[in-house]
Amino acid sequence: KALKERLDEIFQEVDEAIENGSNFLVLSDRDSNYTWGPIPSLLLTSAVQHHLLRRHTRTQISMVVEAGDVREIHHVALLIAYGAAAVNPYLAFESVEDLSRKGYLNVDAETAVKNLTNALSTGVLKIMAKMGVSTIMSYRGAQLFEAVGLSDEVTDLCFTGVASRIQGARFVDIENEQKLLAAEAWSNRKPIQ
Image (cartoon, rainbow, N blue to C red):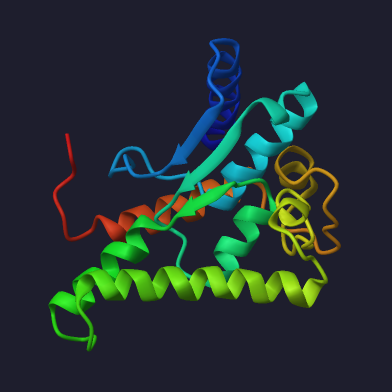
């Protein structure tokens, strides 16, 4: 219930931002903590994308996604395919910097981040090429993927028009999984008050 309610609040915040003249939107989970867990970045991005399409305001704003759950090329490819104009995988960047500083990588931290950026960018271009898409403008928001294991409740709101032949997770299931992940992530730390 909390996940669905928060999405509705975000939709209102986005509408207000557009009404106040904003043309740039950053969807970020950087401020999540023990009490306020993050919404999965793909779910949030696609939900906002479809909300804007339903309101006929999508062309008025550009979306950037700043997400800690982006670790792989496919994650970036999905976010762009569901509406993101740019993706900042900040936690992946911080992770390779840390690996470099601790000596696990044979390059300095700055080079490690550049290498990750190049790998993600090149990987997305390869995915696009295999799908026969030649420009990022054609790829962004194209929803060229099928949903697997999501209920109609979730796909109707967040992935409108996307095929989901195998039913599965509802909002409450996604919320419970996020709670388990947050409990594990914060188990060795003191909660931020």
